Image (cartoon, rainbow, N blue to C red; front, top):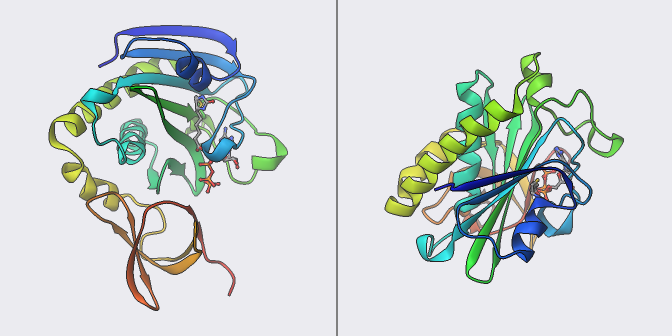
Length: 233
Ligand code: ATP
Ligand code: BTN
């Protein structure tokens, strides 16, 4: 699955580099820091030294249906972190949480006939910029020790290639239950800000990876949006 790996000290965004360059499928680009790390919807991804920031290229013909890729990649990251003894949850549609805070984010984008997947994983950061100080955490903050980023990426790429191969061969079906088992906010009252704001109890996900919500108007499946707990009413 992963053929070449390039590791830079600094770049604007590994995601942008892979989207703009003509890299073959299987290329992995890692950077120690990013000056303009991006999240979903053009949001900023804080990318100071200590974290792992990488993107990789997949061939579209291998992944005709890639709409559930953020969830499958999120599960691979979450299961890898669990294998290190760090309990994590998958936050629909594209994040991984530890101790109630975001430890990793996944960005999947299509560019020509390739799919570019970006992962930001907080590894050895001791602290974060004020905007995300309350909402972000790192592997070091939750495990109490430093981690070798070379070992982390090696282990993570093994999990990723095995999960992506399974997804390519068998589709989303084998992942649905595994993701539901570690879905953040399951059974809780949540709000989803998307085209139409929706409030309800988070039930799980469906076969397409849409979020299932029990609302006052019955069960709804939601394709996209920003999910948070409904704390005030
Ligand atoms: P969430 O609901 O978890 O806040 P989101 O889905 O609304 O995330 P995304 O677009 O997935 O937002 O992620 C971008 C957001 O993640 C940023 O707006 C910022 O709040 C947060 N963020 C940025 N950098 C980091 C980081 N290194 N670690 C954790 N969180 C970060
Ligand atoms: C999110 O939670 O919104 C997704 C964050 C994805 C961040 C990674 S870091 C490596 C790659 N390069 C980027 O500019 N973004 C992704």
